Length: 88
Image (tube, rainbow, N blue to C red; front, side, top):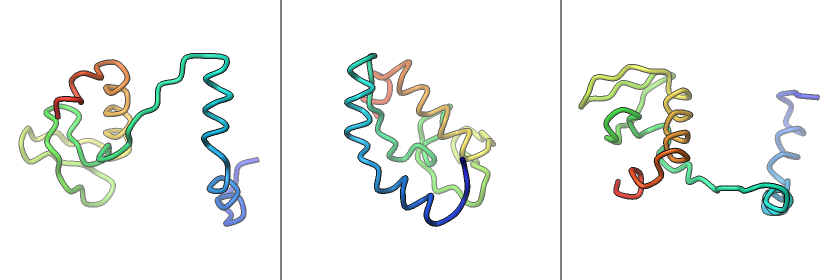
C-alpha cells in the first residue's frame, strides 16, 4: 500500500535497485537513464536553467511547463533520441 510515511520512504531507499534491474533485464531489455539535470534542462531547446518552484520557464526559448512534466519529457527523449542528449 502506498503511503508518505518515513518508514515507507526508508524501505524504498534501502531497496537493492541493482538487483531489481538485474531481475528486470533477465526478462526484458532494460536501458538505464541518466536523470542528471532532467528538471533543469529545457525539453525544447536543451538549455540548462535553474527552475524556481513547481514551474519551469526557459530563458532562451520561453517554454513554460510544469517542472516534473519537463523532467518526464526529457527522460522520454533520452529513450527515443539518445544521440541528441549525448551531444549536449
